Image 1 (cartoon, rainbow, N blue to C red):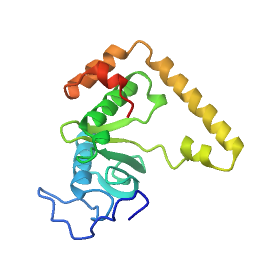
Image 2 (image 1 turned 60 degrees about the horizontal axis):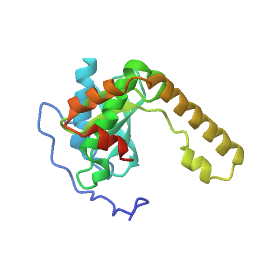
Image 3 (image 1 turned 180 degrees about the horizontal axis):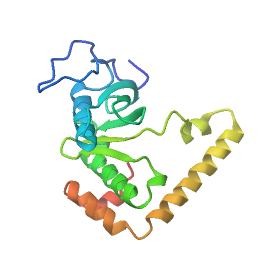
Image 4 (image 1 turned 90 degrees about the vertical axis):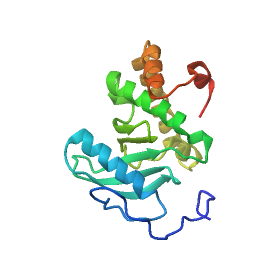
Length: 193
């Protein structure tokens, strides 16, 4: 088992991806190569130029990876995909995140990662990679009280910025969310994911 408790993914060869070209990504335990190929196609549709992704780090087993990029002015992106087995990470969850990132891109791009591309039908989101900084949880569990305090203050300030920037946009978010797939917005707002 790996750190997530899941058994390691099989390293059997993956069949070639159908279509005019195959992804440069090599099969491995990180993410289905068809997902990265679809992400490359999305990025090519957005930018109009060839893009190649190479998964470099699994951030959430089987569903979130950091990928190096060739063909764009950024070094890396984060690719997220739904998990057909875990209902906490189903298409509805990703649609809620996509709708939020679309709204934030329009009204407050400085408070969250930029949504680069998305495919609601396939449950796929490509977003800006914010880098390798430690999470607040990591800081709080660590041994450096000053770093934990600074992290908590930075998190609170960022949350305040987020709320200030999006005040009055609940209806716009709801419209964006419902355009992606049917949902009960009242129930979704009460669900912590």
